[in-house]
Image 1 (spheres, rainbow, N blue to C red):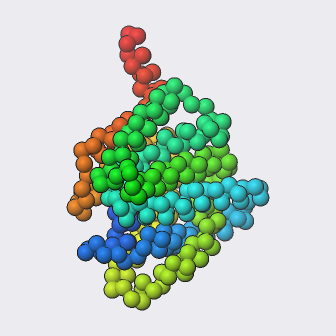
Image 2 (tube, rainbow, N blue to C red):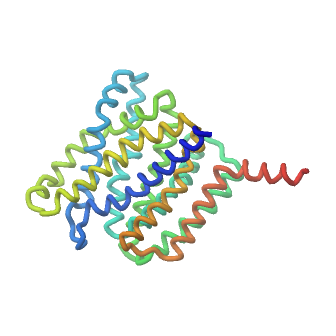
Image 3 (cartoon, helix red, strand yellow):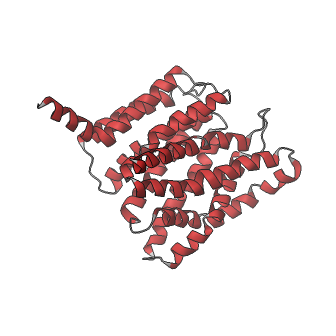
Length: 310
């Protein structure tokens, strides 16, 4: 009982950490007057650089214990698709849309994980997963074309599509971890991924003139604080936490955090006076319903069949 309670508490904590990541991106980019501190490119490179520094000792460990040179390619895939590119896509998107909406759209990840697994990793899809995927895409379509101020006939559509692309890349990363890097511990997978993009992060830090912000912007350190929390707590520490949940319960239970993140992101975004529309909330529940059906449909309907047989 105590172990079960501990798992739920850790899950709730992880949802709060990852759910708050979206507002931290926003706080890293803008001050209270909504004037830019760091650009989206600067936030992305800083986040990657700081997280890479924190995980550097584990990166050294995994490089010393490398099981095959081919694994370097898979670690690079995880680093680029699971960390580097999405970090820039999400910060770019949040220059146009709210952090709450970004959190909602992040729930597309399990849907793309199923699709990518089926198309590129020969992972079979059950009928419940197929139906859930279709329902999820209905929610995605409604959300993309009704994103409160994001119009479908101009450049304002791009921020929503950027998040869709980011979640698709997450799908590639997650399947790579599952099917190609299963022999490594989760912390080593994360560290190996960040290690592969560490040098590009350093290059980005200097190429995007990040140091100039510290020299000339009065709110530079407040923005940097938000980015540091995002990188250290929202990335490095969260990996340890996620690993702990898997070890104390199961991977299936740990994946439930996906359903809680959008709720936390919306609540925090509303607290900071970000607007959220009813259609966005409805779309969120459509997407989450699809994800739940895809992941738990066989269990839900199995129970209903068992009950009806008595």
